[in-house]
Amino acid sequence: MAEINAAIIGGSGFYEPGILADFREETVTTPYGAAVLTLGKVDRMAVAFLPRHGRNHSLLPHQLNYRANLWALRELGIKRVIATAAVGSINQRFTPGSLVIVDQFIDFTKQRPLTFFESGETNRAHIDLTEPYCPELRHSLKAAAAKLGLAVFDGGCYVCTEGPRYETAAEVRAFKILGGDVVGMTAVPEVVLARELGICYANVSIVTNWAAGISPHALTHAEVVEVMRNNQEKLRLLIKEGLLGMAQETGCRCCGR
Image 1 (spheres, one colour):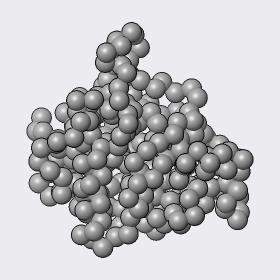
Image 2 (spheres, one colour):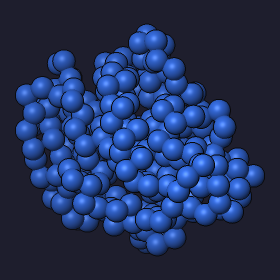
Image 3 (cartoon, rainbow, N blue to C red):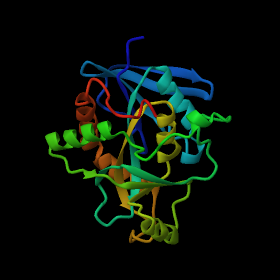
Image 4 (cartoon, helix red, strand yellow):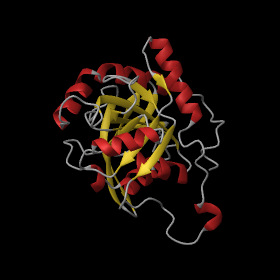
């Protein structure tokens, strides 16, 4: 199998990358279950695409097999991942339609398998997550946005909740006090598992709505899908340019954990 340079994980509303040529589907079997990916090319770069929720959004956030997904990427030799996520905004600066290259997270998940380490491997299991998102990938995405003339927010704190329900207004007020900027349901444990496997990982969050208590109306998934549909093209352009602008060799500490 030819070396696959990078992967895209598509979140809600981003089920087809739209930038792959010569693509084919492949199922990868892992110790945690199977993952179905699309393998193709972005120019001459070999890239894998993994729709996080399945092609028809058949899986809810708490049902996702995060470990199988990340392990499958490692099995393919992938060292870099750009993931998308649909989020609600807690920060008044991040209006619906905004793109946020997040740099931190706060974890409020409750019942998900959070790690590949299930025994007392102390020296390996206690990974450093001071900087959870790869600084080099984030830089590539920022440079891509500048080249394309796209407005992106550099940095933001992603609050991850269990779902599948939306948050209460009281929870959102608490998240704001804690320093949260956006809220979603899939960032954790995905970013943690990537670091455990030594995979560089960046997240582009697309603000699809105001969070509960800020939004003037009740939250709906239809609103999320509609805003994502309207922002598909700029997201594809950003990811493509970010992939093509990556350095040949990594100099970050993600791979060394």
